[in-house]
Amino acid sequence: MSFSFPYLKYALGNLTKKTSCDMYPLKKKEVAPGYRGAIAYDPNKCVNCGMCMKVCSPGAITRTEVEKDGGKEITYRFDWTSCTFCGMCHDFCDEKAITMTDHYEMVGNAEDLVTVATYFKKTPAGKLTVSDDCVFCGLCAKNCPESAITVDRANKSWTVDEEKCVKCGKCISKCPKKALAFAKPQVKCGDDCVFCGLCAKNCPEEAITVDRPNKSWSVDPEKCVLCGKCVSKCPKKTLCI
Image (cartoon, rainbow, N blue to C red; front, side, top):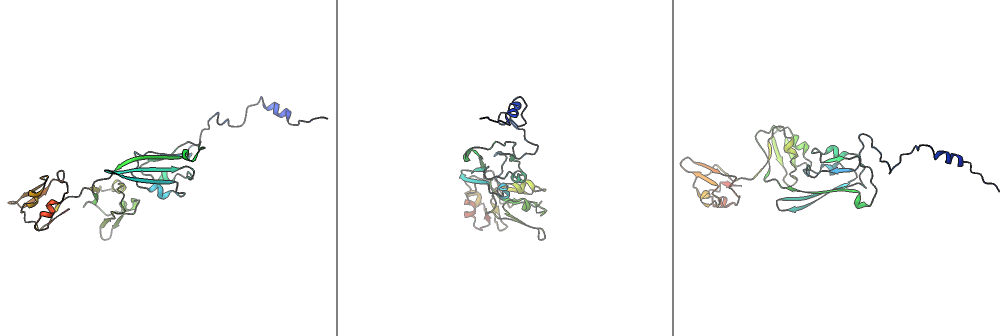
């Protein structure tokens, strides 16, 4: 009986030749320029606008928020097992909090194939307000991720839906006239004021000054705690917050 090994001489010959294969994982492969690998997320840059979630087709990005004193504890989770690595989240993130790395070794358990980060965001004091410098260009509305702002250029009106507003601040950063701000609510006095001084007398922080001879009224916003006692004591009901 005879045995034939037709490929034996080729096998033996190849032992002395240089391999034409990439010796991975012994030798790491360099990725091509522009390669879109695993997602990196910097919570220190994030403003919680949520735009990344809106543009993510497979829904690979999720967010959880926990109310805390003075703000929210926000966690973003990027699931690599659902991600298509299209880079849309990176492209739409104005703050550059999301980047596509050159990391391509994505093998492991489901809990290993995620990017997760948590940060605390203080809630800005006051509501979003617009000053007289507004030119009604509409850039704030165009850049609002929650469509909370309405601008009527024809009638020169500006409104914000407080229920929708997430106070991300994107509208403020995009305003060319710097007319938008989160303003702390203040006590205001109307034209019906008779300068009786009861508001000042009942203010626990002595934040109100009334000059009866000169018929002037002022409030120190740094001292005012918005308790509302002045409003309740005003006989003309001209004070409001």
